[in-house]
Image (cartoon, rainbow, N blue to C red; front, side, top):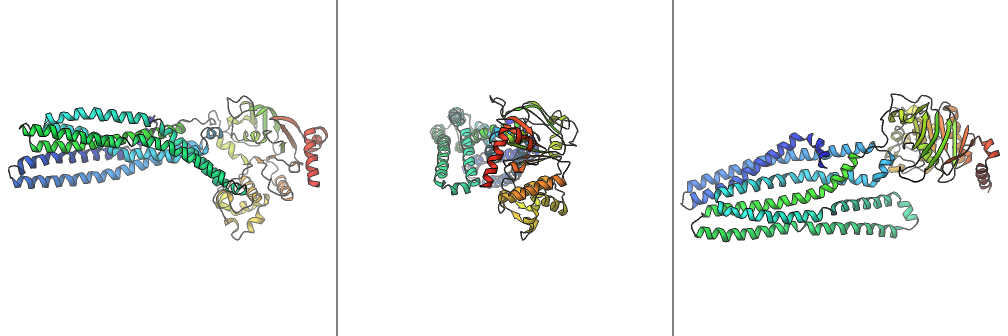
Length: 575
């Protein structure tokens, strides 16, 4: 599982290797101090040799300064390597998400991806920056301290061999009990993020329907579940420290009793006993550090699995098999197309769709709610793949076009308008980053947007908040249409994107499209027949199937569904 992160670690191999080397040297230097302390006591203090004491103290001070230098270098290198690793991992994960189709995103949910990109990566990064030091120091301290202890007195050092397996067994049991809880804890955070995001996004609806109490109860329920899981994992994991401390004191007591007996029997020296007691404290402290690292690894393993799932996810829409071609005309043909969102779904969303849209035509698509109008047009820029049949553009299957070329040739204005924080001009230049002021003005005039934009004090430099805060729904829609026109696409798809625009303004937009973009294939999904009444073809969808195709006149004369929609809307307008 952790193998997938090796390429990102290798980019900082130099920094991490130097950090580990400095850490080992720092630890070895510090572990030499108890040997010098034992020598000071046995060869200096006991016989009264003051020069030996001074030289020993000076040497200890020099070693402490060397250890400080190694520690400082380690801190710089681990910060650079650890933070760099986290940044590279986030970058790789974000780039992978950009390759995802809607189906891939649906697999994880957008809120789950947010947690995996932020919180989970942070936990893995913390394992690097906060785990290497205790892991390396702990391992080195245990090995070197035990070696020095056996050098001082083998009989006293045997107690290490009794103590280590007992503490190791306790640590293994704690890790085994806590490991299944951490994935649940991260999943509960996903749920909390979802509730918070939905509440903030829909805060106007929440307040309009006086549902604050309901939302608060929903949040508190999710928060309580997250708290319950966290408390359960913490109740077990916190046993780690007292277990190690208990082992420290029991072992020290045993060492004092056994060492005191040996000293009184003349079988060891006070210096050896003092030195081994110092090493014992270091070994036991190292065991506590190592145990904490195991707990850190246990938690990060759950996050590593979640991040690895994103990195290992294969985008279901790729450029595999694509040719180096671009869309020239905008001719579209649906050849017995069937589609369903999930491969395992029992029913098709679209069934046996056979349609042909010639370049420059205006196509109207109408149908009841749930008739799969939006699903149909999302196949054209390959936001989803066709399940069965073929979708051809300019006579070539859509799969033959590189995704970038295909989507550059298709301008889409979806039902849900998306504007970003920034000026109106910056939002418009999403359509063409090189568009000058003249191009912006022309596109906005065609989208019937320039009048209200120039009515703002700052005009095109007017700052928009997140999601276009400060604009009405109709104004947002018109800016989105202008943004799509700036792409100069061969195919323009308007998915019910004039629903918040009055009839006169909508008519002006369609008139401009007909006059100024005669070669562009225009597909208009609408609820109002007035939006598509002049279309070259009108497609009626019913339950994911084509019910009829024709002009306004032919459908009014020969199609009952169209006639019913037309007369119901006309009566509503008359009322």
